[in-house]
Figure 1 (cartoon, rainbow, N blue to C red):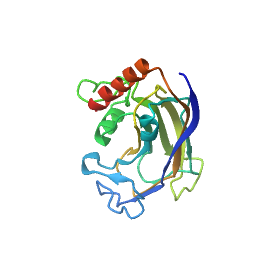
Figure 2: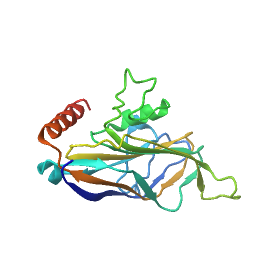
Figure 3: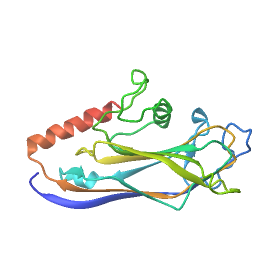
Amino acid sequence: MESEDTRTLKIEIPTCNLIKQAEEPIWTDLTLANGWQTDASLGLNAFWTGTIDLSGYARDMKTFYPQAGIIQQGAFNTERGGEGSIIYTIVSSIPMEPLTVALNLLAGSAQGLLGSLAAAVDQQNWETVLFAETELYVENMNISPNPFGIQQPLMNRQTGSLSPTASDTLYIMKMFLPLGSNQTVVQIPASRVIMPGKFGTEPDVEYMMRLKRSVELSQQA
Protein backbone atom coordinates (compact mmCIF):
# COMPACT_ATOMS: atom_id res chain seq x y z
CA MET A 1 0.00 0.00 0.00
CA GLU A 2 1.76 3.13 -1.24
CA SER A 3 -0.31 5.79 0.55
CA GLU A 4 -2.90 5.76 3.31
CA ASP A 5 -5.99 7.84 4.07
CA THR A 6 -7.65 7.08 7.42
CA ARG A 7 -11.44 7.19 7.41
CA THR A 8 -14.34 6.04 9.61
CA LEU A 9 -17.31 4.77 7.61
CA LYS A 10 -20.71 4.75 9.29
CA ILE A 11 -24.38 4.25 8.51
CA GLU A 12 -27.43 5.05 10.64
CA ILE A 13 -30.20 2.45 10.97
CA PRO A 14 -33.57 3.76 12.23
CA THR A 15 -35.71 2.37 15.02
CA CYS A 16 -38.63 0.14 14.05
CA ASN A 17 -42.03 -0.56 15.61
CA LEU A 18 -44.20 -3.39 14.31
CA ILE A 19 -47.77 -4.21 15.43
CA LYS A 20 -50.28 -7.01 14.84
CA GLN A 21 -52.81 -9.17 16.64
CA ALA A 22 -51.38 -12.30 18.27
CA GLU A 23 -53.13 -14.67 15.85
CA GLU A 24 -52.12 -12.78 12.69
CA PRO A 25 -49.32 -14.37 10.59
CA ILE A 26 -47.90 -11.04 9.33
CA TRP A 27 -47.33 -7.55 10.68
CA THR A 28 -50.40 -5.47 9.86
CA ASP A 29 -49.50 -2.04 11.25
CA LEU A 30 -46.31 -0.66 9.69
CA THR A 31 -47.04 2.98 10.50
CA LEU A 32 -43.86 3.24 12.59
CA ALA A 33 -41.73 0.81 10.58
CA ASN A 34 -39.52 3.77 9.67
CA GLY A 35 -38.08 2.36 6.47
CA TRP A 36 -37.96 -1.28 7.60
CA GLN A 37 -39.57 -3.73 5.21
CA THR A 38 -41.62 -6.91 5.46
CA ASP A 39 -42.43 -9.54 2.85
CA ALA A 40 -44.99 -12.34 2.75
CA SER A 41 -42.24 -14.87 1.93
CA LEU A 42 -40.45 -13.89 5.16
CA GLY A 43 -43.42 -14.30 7.49
CA LEU A 44 -42.81 -12.17 10.59
CA ASN A 45 -39.20 -11.40 9.72
CA ALA A 46 -38.44 -7.74 9.00
CA PHE A 47 -35.38 -6.11 7.50
CA TRP A 48 -33.72 -2.79 6.71
CA THR A 49 -31.18 -2.22 3.94
CA GLY A 50 -28.78 0.58 3.12
CA THR A 51 -25.52 1.31 1.33
CA ILE A 52 -22.26 3.16 1.86
CA ASP A 53 -21.05 4.84 -1.32
CA LEU A 54 -17.34 4.35 -2.04
CA SER A 55 -17.51 5.32 -5.71
CA GLY A 56 -15.37 8.43 -5.22
CA TYR A 57 -12.54 6.33 -3.80
CA ALA A 58 -13.07 3.69 -6.49
CA ARG A 59 -12.63 6.35 -9.20
CA ASP A 60 -9.29 7.23 -7.59
CA MET A 61 -8.38 3.50 -7.70
CA LYS A 62 -8.19 3.25 -3.92
CA THR A 63 -8.72 0.12 -1.85
CA PHE A 64 -10.53 0.16 1.50
CA TYR A 65 -8.81 -1.70 4.35
CA PRO A 66 -11.34 -2.13 7.21
CA GLN A 67 -9.81 -2.37 10.67
CA ALA A 68 -12.87 -3.14 12.81
CA GLY A 69 -16.65 -3.37 12.89
CA ILE A 70 -18.63 -1.71 15.68
CA ILE A 71 -22.37 -1.48 16.36
CA GLN A 72 -23.82 1.21 18.60
CA GLN A 73 -27.51 1.05 19.47
CA GLY A 74 -30.32 2.55 21.47
CA ALA A 75 -31.42 1.73 24.99
CA PHE A 76 -33.44 -1.49 24.75
CA ASN A 77 -35.54 -3.91 22.70
CA THR A 78 -39.17 -4.67 23.52
CA GLU A 79 -41.42 -7.51 22.44
CA ARG A 80 -44.90 -8.36 23.71
CA GLY A 81 -45.72 -12.02 23.24
CA GLY A 82 -43.49 -14.41 21.35
CA GLU A 83 -40.41 -16.17 22.62
CA GLY A 84 -37.56 -13.79 21.87
CA SER A 85 -35.80 -12.87 18.66
CA ILE A 86 -32.61 -12.91 16.61
CA ILE A 87 -31.22 -9.66 15.25
CA TYR A 88 -28.59 -9.89 12.53
CA THR A 89 -26.54 -7.00 11.14
CA ILE A 90 -24.20 -7.48 8.18
CA VAL A 91 -21.86 -5.40 6.02
CA SER A 92 -21.08 -7.00 2.67
CA SER A 93 -19.24 -6.05 -0.51
CA ILE A 94 -22.00 -7.60 -2.68
CA PRO A 95 -25.81 -7.24 -2.58
CA MET A 96 -27.90 -9.58 -0.41
CA GLU A 97 -31.36 -11.14 -0.75
CA PRO A 98 -33.42 -10.98 2.50
CA LEU A 99 -34.90 -14.46 2.01
CA THR A 100 -31.44 -15.96 1.52
CA VAL A 101 -30.14 -14.28 4.67
CA ALA A 102 -33.15 -15.47 6.69
CA LEU A 103 -32.91 -19.07 5.47
CA ASN A 104 -29.23 -19.27 6.33
CA LEU A 105 -29.78 -17.86 9.81
CA LEU A 106 -32.67 -20.22 10.53
CA ALA A 107 -30.51 -23.14 9.38
CA GLY A 108 -27.98 -22.34 12.11
CA SER A 109 -25.50 -20.64 9.81
CA ALA A 110 -25.03 -17.13 8.42
CA GLN A 111 -23.61 -15.32 5.40
CA GLY A 112 -19.99 -16.31 4.85
CA LEU A 113 -20.21 -19.53 6.90
CA LEU A 114 -20.77 -23.12 5.89
CA GLY A 115 -24.18 -24.62 6.59
CA SER A 116 -26.55 -27.43 5.77
CA LEU A 117 -28.14 -25.34 3.02
CA ALA A 118 -24.85 -24.40 1.35
CA ALA A 119 -25.62 -26.46 -1.74
CA ALA A 120 -28.96 -24.75 -2.33
CA VAL A 121 -28.67 -21.27 -0.80
CA ASP A 122 -26.00 -18.69 -1.58
CA GLN A 123 -24.10 -17.89 1.60
CA GLN A 124 -21.39 -15.72 0.03
CA ASN A 125 -17.87 -16.41 1.22
CA TRP A 126 -15.23 -15.25 3.64
CA GLU A 127 -14.13 -12.29 1.51
CA THR A 128 -17.49 -10.68 0.82
CA VAL A 129 -18.76 -10.58 4.41
CA LEU A 130 -16.66 -7.80 5.89
CA PHE A 131 -18.46 -7.73 9.24
CA ALA A 132 -21.56 -9.28 10.80
CA GLU A 133 -23.10 -9.53 14.27
CA THR A 134 -25.79 -11.90 15.52
CA GLU A 135 -27.72 -11.08 18.71
CA LEU A 136 -30.17 -13.33 20.54
CA TYR A 137 -32.76 -11.63 22.78
CA VAL A 138 -35.14 -13.15 25.33
CA GLU A 139 -37.62 -11.62 27.74
CA ASN A 140 -36.06 -10.15 30.86
CA MET A 141 -37.50 -12.33 33.63
CA ASN A 142 -35.94 -10.10 36.32
CA ILE A 143 -38.58 -7.47 35.57
CA SER A 144 -41.96 -8.46 36.97
CA PRO A 145 -44.40 -7.41 35.84
CA ASN A 146 -42.92 -6.61 32.43
CA PRO A 147 -45.86 -5.08 30.51
CA PHE A 148 -43.65 -3.60 27.78
CA GLY A 149 -41.83 -6.88 27.13
CA ILE A 150 -38.35 -5.49 27.72
CA GLN A 151 -35.78 -7.92 26.30
CA GLN A 152 -32.30 -8.82 27.47
CA PRO A 153 -29.38 -10.00 25.30
CA LEU A 154 -28.60 -13.68 25.80
CA MET A 155 -25.89 -14.11 23.18
CA ASN A 156 -23.78 -11.94 20.87
CA ARG A 157 -21.54 -13.35 18.13
CA GLN A 158 -19.48 -11.70 15.43
CA THR A 159 -18.16 -12.94 12.09
CA GLY A 160 -16.55 -11.37 9.04
CA SER A 161 -13.22 -11.15 7.26
CA LEU A 162 -12.47 -7.41 7.40
CA SER A 163 -10.98 -8.10 3.98
CA PRO A 164 -9.69 -5.23 1.82
CA THR A 165 -12.14 -4.36 -0.95
CA ALA A 166 -12.08 -2.41 -4.20
CA SER A 167 -15.88 -2.38 -4.40
CA ASP A 168 -17.59 0.95 -5.07
CA THR A 169 -20.43 0.13 -2.64
CA LEU A 170 -20.83 -1.56 0.73
CA TYR A 171 -24.22 -3.16 1.41
CA ILE A 172 -25.76 -3.17 4.89
CA MET A 173 -28.68 -5.24 6.11
CA LYS A 174 -30.25 -5.52 9.54
CA MET A 175 -32.74 -8.33 10.00
CA PHE A 176 -35.20 -9.14 12.78
CA LEU A 177 -36.20 -12.81 13.12
CA PRO A 178 -38.81 -13.42 15.85
CA LEU A 179 -39.00 -16.74 17.66
CA GLY A 180 -42.57 -17.98 17.97
CA SER A 181 -45.47 -16.21 16.30
CA ASN A 182 -47.64 -14.62 19.00
CA GLN A 183 -45.94 -11.25 19.11
CA THR A 184 -48.24 -8.24 19.15
CA VAL A 185 -45.80 -5.32 19.44
CA VAL A 186 -42.07 -5.19 18.69
CA GLN A 187 -39.65 -2.30 19.05
CA ILE A 188 -36.15 -2.53 17.57
CA PRO A 189 -33.90 0.34 18.71
CA ALA A 190 -32.00 2.58 16.34
CA SER A 191 -28.40 1.59 15.70
CA ARG A 192 -25.25 2.76 13.99
CA VAL A 193 -22.68 0.62 12.17
CA ILE A 194 -19.12 1.99 12.30
CA MET A 195 -16.17 0.70 10.29
CA PRO A 196 -12.86 2.49 10.85
CA GLY A 197 -10.23 1.78 8.24
CA LYS A 198 -7.83 3.15 5.66
CA PHE A 199 -8.00 3.85 1.95
CA GLY A 200 -4.78 2.97 0.22
CA THR A 201 -3.33 3.14 -3.27
CA GLU A 202 -1.95 -0.22 -4.29
CA PRO A 203 0.47 -1.03 -7.10
CA ASP A 204 -1.44 -1.29 -10.38
CA VAL A 205 -1.19 -5.06 -10.78
CA GLU A 206 -2.37 -5.80 -7.25
CA TYR A 207 -5.22 -3.30 -7.54
CA MET A 208 -6.42 -4.64 -10.89
CA MET A 209 -6.41 -8.19 -9.54
CA ARG A 210 -8.43 -7.08 -6.50
CA LEU A 211 -10.87 -5.16 -8.68
CA LYS A 212 -11.27 -8.19 -10.94
CA ARG A 213 -12.00 -10.35 -7.92
CA SER A 214 -14.58 -7.85 -6.62
CA VAL A 215 -16.40 -7.87 -9.95
CA GLU A 216 -16.38 -11.66 -10.08
CA LEU A 217 -17.84 -11.92 -6.60
CA SER A 218 -20.54 -9.34 -7.30
CA GLN A 219 -21.63 -11.27 -10.40
CA GLN A 220 -22.12 -14.37 -8.27
CA ALA A 221 -24.65 -12.59 -6.05
